[in-house]
Image 1: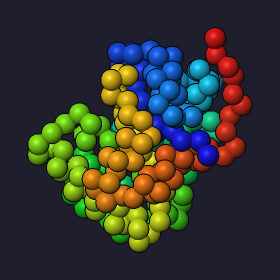
Image 2: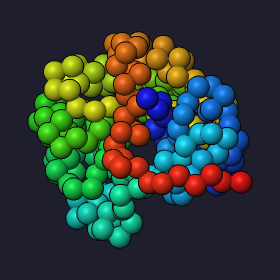
Image 3: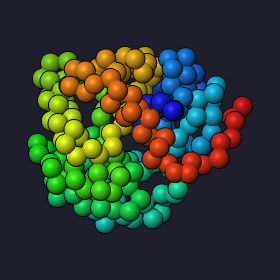
Length: 213
């Protein structure tokens, strides 16, 4: 199965090129990386999964972005918001994943949202950047939120993805390091491995691959 970092940000959003980040990710053990705004392809044997990130607070605008820019080969990732917004997003056709749960209001993702995510096959992303880059209160808050998310996942079984949201090769982490990070909030290594395979599984069938020079 193909393990993927479910979101990285090469230049111009970050400070490392897509080729360099793909090369490093491959050397660490990843088979694929998700890159917002990228074209499907392959660098150094690492598959590139294109993504569209939608940051809106109005569900109608989310739907509009999907109609204009979404397609079968692009992962559609929507930033989480308040509870009602999240529930509405989780019923939208074309959404693959809801992200930034740790930045949403408390209880923004509850048992109703968990059930909707499971029923519609929409993944919830766990952004590991607060655990990699932050410390203190912000890091602890993210740990608590992810612990609650894992409890809901154990009950309802909705898909999960894991992303470093790396903007540099220095922020990338290997699959084994990610599995260890996930134990901090109660996610076992087998579940973490399955979550790293979800991004690829969400695209069915995937786009044909072009090997890039």
